[in-house]
Image 1: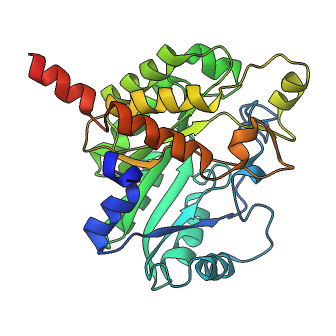
Image 2 (image 1 turned 30 degrees about the vertical axis):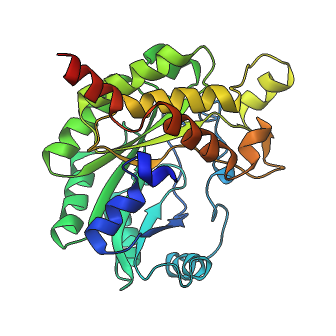
Length: 308
């Protein structure tokens, strides 16, 4: 049995809503980031080289051309798609620029959803209202927030440039207007261990959230962390430790929360370490094995309820 048997996955949620599993078509709309252009800082987050995560990074293709190229990869697997503005900070521009780029994507008749990836400190009330407008047109809207950790100490260490308070503020404003929020958390950040991941999860749940994305820390070429890794100053999670921590987090998560992702991989030579992150299925298989043995999503919460 696969992940869908143990976890409320994005694919299962889409199938219930749309009758089929949707595919996200990633878009690089040439946005930048306030942590790179000097507004907040330069150099970005210490783990970051977005080219390792964004399929279309660096492309010269237009938004419609990127959608068509992405659709070719999923030919025959679905008829409906979500436009995913993934690269860098996809709310970091003027309102009219954002609207024009989002409009270019959602005008495609096969696009039924809009997913916007951004930072917690780059979501103005105007941006939220813009997203509300798409939702009112019947488009499935998700705001993806890269929190990575709920620890302000960790956020400062990785040069993130925002605080947990920024995140809570944005989540509160977005969800008050009916916008669904998916939060990204990274496991394996320097200075953090298993209990820190659980603390971050609980803080996110307390703030209110609709979806989660879990990622193992990747050391990628071009990142600040790559230098530390080459100097043996960063300890990385083994696949066993990652699967254990993800499994525990899933078991502490209420069943109505949708998991958009529970692991991630990157391609060499961009990926430097850990090696197991270079293969799509390694982490997923280990997580499913853990869930099969110890229980699926929300099982710890059910056990506590029974005990009381």
